[in-house]
Image 1 (tube, rainbow over the protein chains, first blue to last red):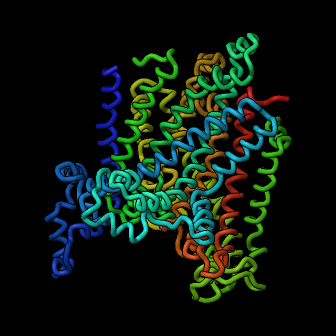
Image 2 (image 1 turned 90 degrees about the vertical axis):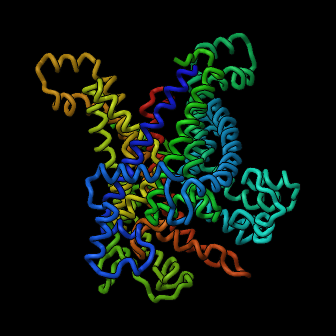
Image 3 (image 1 turned 180 degrees about the vertical axis):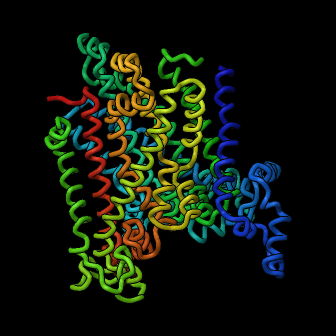
Length: 345
Length: 291
């Protein structure tokens, strides 16, 4: 077991080298003159025209061979806080750590209902193949996964903010931000819901919940659709097995056959997929966060990408790869618990 | 042919096919149903009647109203259909070619080559797709070409995996061994004997991907790194509507048309591709067809 975990984690350094090479090569698509701008802090450094620029390029080694420059760059990134993020104006690691709780809060709260909902809907659809219930659920899922997240999110805003004015965008209202940033509110985790409870501030708790609901609905619907589809297919597959026929022949009620015998086995592929889905959510709620102006990792990463903030992009990519590797590992370790036939080697 | 019959018999996929045909017609007839005006540099530049910010409701001149910056919504949507087809089919074509090449090399030669290529696939799978595509599009400069390259560069992996596993399955079949003893060379073995048999799974994948790639492309435009300002592109039009969805104090739905029409266009387009793809997958999986 320990051996297995170790081997899986070995993949991470490989990913690190590959990702950093990839991002560095992207960066090298820019000419030295374009890249020098990242090193220049004031206009006075540029006095002296072309020669001065050439001198600066020499000074920072921007005309050296690829590998030399890569080595320099990677040392820089590894030695201090993953480098400096120009868009956030602080070290990359600090930004990632400070935004992480916000994204996790949102993602977990959206993941739980979408997973449970998918298992429930998928079981229903699979058990009622080609009957009205199945068709309704299928249409519901295809709608969900064809609906652009940004259109769905904007409709949510239109209804719940524009019309009803229930759920405003952002993470907290202005008064709550002032409260949270003041000295007498202790930041335990960085997640607003938990912190406000620990501080015993009901109003802040309700306020942050109010800001979370619309993005949660958006994320839930999109992910629910994907997982329901897999659950349905897997349920169909399982219901065709011999042991299900045996169970039915024993005279067990259809309910017990479906919910106890079939569902448990049908859960296997969905678990794998849910792990992936969770990982992608942790790294990719870019659009939802942007629409609802929810300051989290996705919004930051999108901003960094559009501004070609390479250290920030690399930091984000590493964070994402780490989440992916860890969640895959968790799924693999959970697998033998759900299915005793599986043995990790 | 049998496949096509099944697609037409199934109500969901036949709806998808009909709606896709309508989109094809709109795209083909674009110069007739939304004629570009003489002062336009390119037909893809949406004409604007003035430079006011506030969208204008539907009128005789502007069939579906105008969005922020007075871009004509009707014109943008009609020509945007062409953009959607170009992006969707372009990305699917380029990424499936990359995927097929990588996948067939890996499966056919096996051993260390397979191992290395599959680790490359793993690494690409660990890249955050949208963020990476944003960086590459920005680097290459805005526009359709850069968008297609960027989305393909990070979207070919599933094709490689499917092709690889299909080839591994087919490679062991008897007719391949027969061809081999006959002295057929590697190249034509792959292209004439193996790939045609692995075609169907790739087709399903490509159909499903066309819709999602159009979604990804419009997400890029929505996030501001896709096409140029004013380009006839559905995602672009949705991003214009962003500032107007809250409406005005007394009338929250005042600018509904800025979101509704472009949103419907993307949704219907993607929905149709997914309906067809879903039905194709059912055909592929013999279990699910019940008479």
